[in-house]
Image (tube, rainbow, N blue to C red; front, side, top):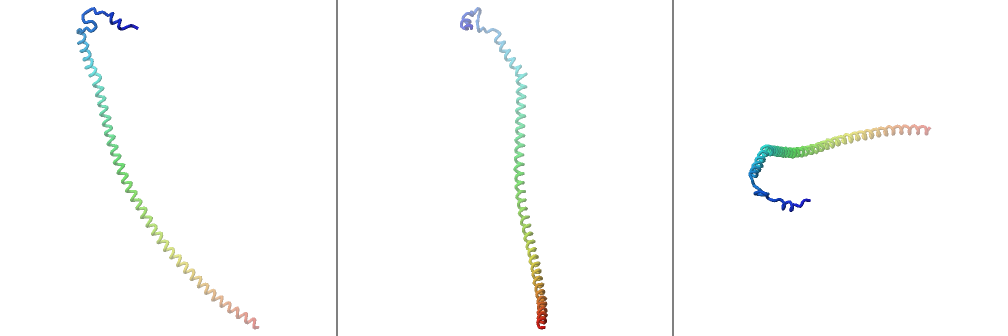
Amino acid sequence: MVNFSILISNSEVTGPGGLFDINATLPLVAIQFILLMVILNIILYSPLLAVITERNEYILNNLAKASEILAQANDLTAEYEQELSKVRKEAQLEITNSQKIHKEILETELIISQKYIDNLLDNVTTDLINKKTTALNSLDAIVQSLCVEIESKLSI
């Protein structure tokens, strides 16, 4: 490797100014730098910054719209949940009323059926008792006539 201290010590200044000689080149380089900076700013950075700003505004607008839509969706969800709760309560009340009415109808029909069965049973029982009485009376008459016949045969 090259030793830099030897290189610097060997470089001799042969003219005025030496290593840091300021001629007309320094202001020319500064003007070149500023001119290049202005040209790059106009050609490259300004359009790029405009596109970035436009993109940021687009993103912010879309975020704002999304927030509005989300708020509307939340409002609609809350509204529909309230309606659903109301309808469920009404349906439950309707079911309860229907069950109550059907229970009353069933009880009424059951009572009517029970009365009809009781009347039918009373009629059948009365009918059977009447037939039994009639049968016993006719059987009694037959037994009497048989007794009379047996007595008449025995007395002969």
